[in-house]
Length: 269
Ligand SMILES: Nc1ncnc2c1ncn2[C@@H]1O[C@H](COP(=O)(O)OP(=O)(O)OP(=O)(O)O)[C@@H](O)[C@H]1O
Ligand SMILES: [Mg+2]
Image 1 (spheres, protein in one colour):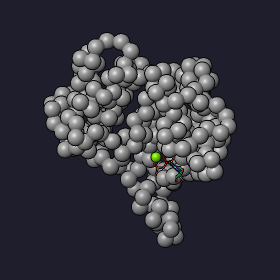
Image 2: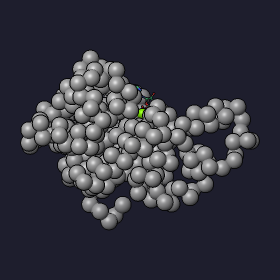
Image 3: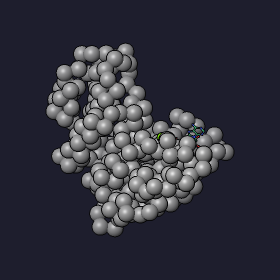
């Protein structure tokens, strides 16, 4: 990651919850300005925790960066509050597509609008509807009742309302049908290219992530165990076996591994 200037530099951070539960044990990640970087890893590896330490949402859960540093645009942000960090142009799309269920789709989008820096709410809404035409169609519907894919579009759209420079996306594909995943990822790539938004993408769907991001990090139990170009990672045997499910080792696996394999299957979607 030497070539491009970094918009985000996570330098060897350690993160604890409730002062005692050590979850991140020396994590370093760089996101180049205008780049997309993927962060892969199994359940509980610490991916969401990494995103929360960037956005400042960690504090809400009694978590803390206890060592190392996070620099955004050259400034240390890891001791700042979530609101301050958001104003600087970082937005996290949290996992599980949490819409405000009783509000309409458009009201959900407007929630993100108070953080924007320029332009009117209307202009920003038009931009979101340009990228997500489906949301324009559904704008007056109650968010709790639109489809899962439309809810995911709503939370990504809400993030876009804040005029972000860096978007932290937590498992946008989770639980969605392949066709919808494809649609959402196309829009994300378009946003990245046309709006020059930098993206840190957390995904369990490794195949998808490695196709979208040119560079990726692999996390296991709170540590980065590998990072390389996606091209190199895609041909790595361990990645192929554990994340892409491309080898036939499944046949020789123990019961425990089979359970893991089942869980992994959704990464292939
Ligand atoms: N608020 C919290 N308090 C205590 N421990 C937590 C808290 N949030 C997460 N953890 C623990 O930190 C570890 C990492 O969790 P995290 O949610 O970051 O993993 P993840 O990689 O995002 O997993 P998943 O793929 O399931 O979303 C887990 O062991 C989890 O139990
Ligand atoms: Mg997570």
